Image (tube, rainbow, N blue to C red):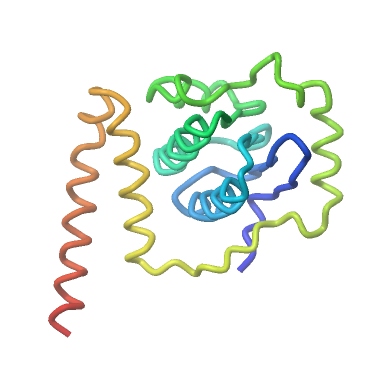
Length: 182
């Protein structure tokens, strides 16, 4: 399966990922898979280009927070290029501006932004190949992990996403019990 909403290119200084649709629970597993593969090779910096992304949901933001924590531990970062005001506000309201670098003016890529976007546009193999057709169970686990990451960030997020996480945990328990009975 190819997710055409996410395209990428590995530059010398970062993994550049461009999201051309809404960042959501649908494409966040592919984002995580790609970023994990890149970070597993010892790389440290991910740039997420949101220039044409109309918005992001909490699962996508939780996935970003988890990736940012992993990068920070290894001396790297997740940087966000060109978020809309609405997306920036959503990220700030959850405290992601403490983990992510939102449009950092000192980033080297700021001086080659349009060239990088052109390279990505010309790269015919840039669409993310999502080998994992996620099962409902795997998707539920992914969504739960993303929301638990957000909950751990601060008390407000814990209160906001506590019920969501409890519901997802109940779904996982029910699914596990059903498979055990079969």
